Length: 133
Image (cartoon, rainbow, N blue to C red; front, side, top):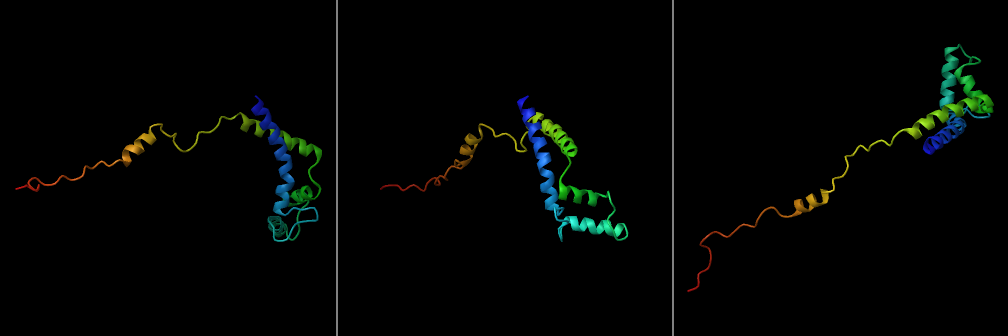
């Protein structure tokens, strides 16, 4: 149960903290849209689609507003709630099995046997022994 609660807290905090970082990385900054960024490309596409201007309330306009001023309190609460649910869900999930098969305890013994020489040295042909006179 503590694992679920910890996942919920971390998920909520991460969701709220990630928004300004991600938007800033995309180019939606306080002073405006950064040149040669993903945001600039989005703004250009929106302007071309709208005949030269970015429509109020469009995705680009909303993201620029959030990048410049941040999210409102109600938006932060909603985002934290969704992040908490997702984090709690991840915290409650069982640990995934690894993609590699578990190591066999006899693996070292098998390797030792495999490294030993399996071939006996050749025996000298019969009759090649030296006879003393």
